[in-house]
Amino acid sequence: MRFLKALKELILNTLFPPVCISCKKEGDFLCVDCLKNLDKKKIRSNGRKIDDPDIHYLDGVIYALDYAKNPQIQAAVKQFKYRFTEELAEYFADLMIEKIGELNMAKKRKIILIPVPLHKKRLNYRGFNQAEVIAKVIQDRMGNEAEVIPMLKRVRHTDQQAKLNKSERHKNLKGAFILNKKCIHEQKMYTKNTIYFIIDDVFTTGATLESCAEVLKGSGFEKAYGLVIARAFR
Ligand SMILES: [Zn+2]
Image (cartoon, rainbow, N blue to C red; front, side, top):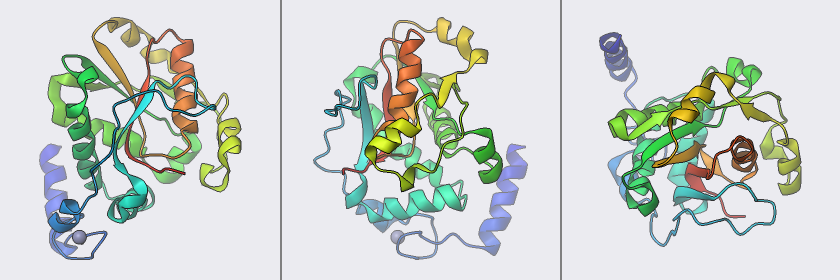
């Protein structure tokens, strides 16, 4: 299967050479120059509690970049979500792994990656869950250190968050997630020396991650952090 996948990629890349999503240069989905120009400085994403009255359960969010300062990442995230370009997950995963490496709290601990689930309806429509794709690449790259466990399920189809304001977003997601019963035994396998990251693409109001964290905390998880590509400050 791996071989077939590689072959398919080779054929596609020969017929349709990748083009940089940001500057349109041929060769890569995000070219070396655009990656070099990422604004990674001055971000303190050490997973401290978020200063927001609407966030109670989420213990912090780790993000690789400031969304507003990195138009190339904005373009890449949009492309990844709506016109599936699987390769982009690799760039995102690399940025996120780099951040994990900077975190003291993740050192010498098993990292469990919990992708924000999509509702079946949306999954059927889109064909993939972008958070899960990124989480799987992180798992592949980190080997034994990280593992994807789909501990959450989305039980309610919600309106597109993008159209809503902050308080509407929080309301919209109340009760949208439950614990995935199939994974409860796996949750018990890990207690100490484990860190849980809920994986999403962009952190905007935090409503999605907060709603996921609420379910995890309600099920006995001590801490739940978010790990995203970028944070959009509002
Ligand atoms: Zn470029």
